[in-house]
Image 1 (tube, rainbow, N blue to C red):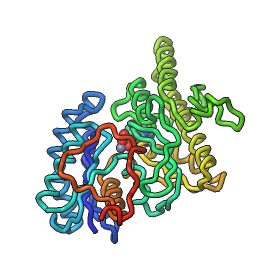
Image 2 (tube, protein in one colour):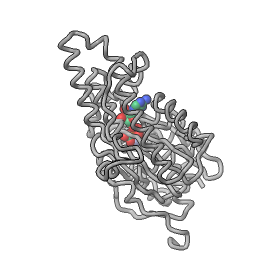
Image 3 (cartoon, rainbow, N blue to C red):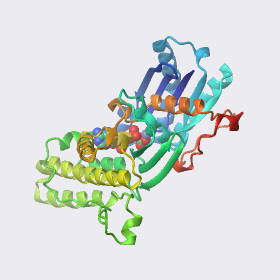
Image 4 (cartoon, rainbow, N blue to C red):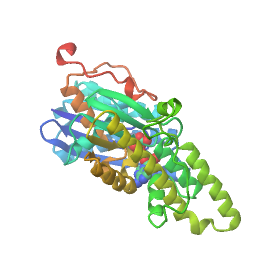
Length: 359
Ligand code: KG4
Ligand code: ZN
């Protein structure tokens, strides 16, 4: 069974072909980074127009790469949300149009479920159940994943997502969009212990904690951390030391975020008695995070799985895979209306019904 996946939720047009029997057949990606860089961030209208330009050529490209013609595709999966409304509508329109023309079903996929399942595309794929740390530009979540479609939210960001904090802090340091990877590059030459930045919501991670702290046990808050960096930036600027200190500030910021993510992930594994951690989303590409998670998980005898580096950020492969797995599990969504959902929460996903329920 071959599924075509189309991702268009933000600033990347991703297309892929995934086969139930043979795995990932082909995938192609067009990043809009160069186009948005001049504006310092994603311009939604420009993003939508670019998805329109790229989608069909990329679909042709993956078909050619995989040696498959369009009528041989069995299903079309597209990102339904969350994301930018106009950008989502491009992917939904292309998917529905193709589905009508080819007389094949189209399936809307939750973008975060795509990220969550993306480590299943790697050589060393995890098996259910596991705890998932989802760290993207728009979301930071800890989830208990019992099986496909069975997700329990343990905690999430109450303000900025981890990727958003990276991007905003990078901007404070004068780095171009997208800031996360740029900041990580700058931090390589910095001293992570140079600045004692806050570790938000880590207070109370120990055994004896106040009830108020317990409620936030698996929640995240990164907005204050960014403000702490701003305070240092202003002071260093006034002192004329900012340029020399930037790598140390970047490394100290990165270390603070990583420490919070690692401590909470380990506590979540303990809480739900799982031995497997899955990390997904753009920030999952961060090498300091990977190194410290590997070390912490090894210490407690847990396994940690990541998507391949190039599949950490948005891509069509994760959408084709998520669609394919849901279809195999018997969940079909073949309605004809446009149903892009810019703000759908992952825990609003319906569980996968048994095949008998969809017959
Ligand atoms: O998952 P993703 O591609 O998009 C969303 O669904 O939001 O994640 C993009 C986010 C951006 O905030 C980007 O700065 C961040 O992931 N990111 C990184 C790294 N690579 C991407 N953050 C830290 N270190 C990196 N190496
Ligand atoms: Zn994403």
